[in-house]
Length: 261
Image (cartoon, rainbow, N blue to C red; front, side, top):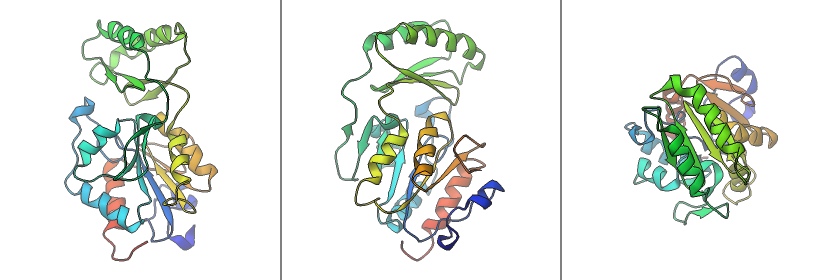
């Protein structure tokens, strides 16, 4: 990858992430904790000034080969980056939009059951500051405002999930527990994008910040690409950015250069 001036394995191992190049790359970006700083509640995140323009510029330079791969619903992502619309996957791969002007399509047949949502909401009632986010295809138990509740919450969620008649998986996130079907993940979403003409033949790069991104790390690595964590090293990632501000700066450096990919 040296001839592409893209992130290299040696530099990543040393904690150095090289600038993006003007070569045929495909860039996949997580949102919360990667592009955006985390907040106490999902609705409290702030889109920094200049980020929308940076994303638009990077997408143009990559000839459209940029997609957001998020745990948020696509409608929520569109709101955060309005008026910009991008190629995007939401709810950990349960939703996908292959073209900015296209429609959102689910990749799974059914929502998680209301009975599971009800059980989770009852379970968190004794814990002030803990709440359950309903994303149709996944539920998230947030405990950022009550970190001491983590142990009891994990035990309770496990008990609820183990009693279900359907298969679901739980994943760690930042001060949160994700509950979803095993039928989709971020790696599957990236694989779907790579089959399309916009992304086909390009070297994939994926940047994410937590456990829910590790399927994406594995996928891009298997396809000869490069995976980067944010905040700290993670399994499958060859390097790490110090935080979202570093990711934004890295992306802006590429978007602001004058040549096109």
